[in-house]
Amino acid sequence: MTTDGRTRTIVREGPWGFFFLLAYIGAAIYFISISDGSFWAVVLGLLQAVVWPVYVMYHVLLLIGA
Image (cartoon, rainbow, N blue to C red; front, side, top):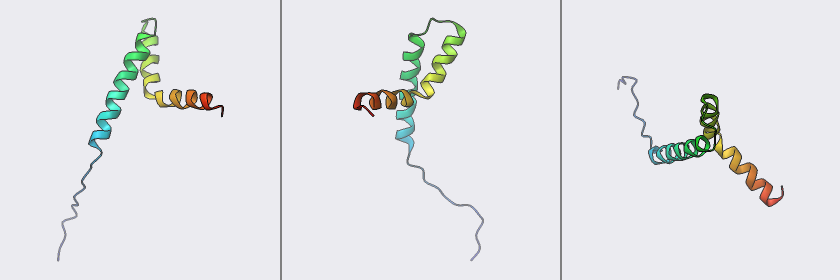
């Protein structure tokens, strides 16, 4: 029996990717809307949108007193 070296991979994480894309877009809109509108403030807002879960975890830990 010979094989041609090709394997088939089924990826089922599509819905999660769409959810994270929507979360990024929402976070980007939020962080850009609270900026002053200058170029570097918008760039900073986009970078903050990438790491918004860190902000969430920080505030959750503050609330529970950890």
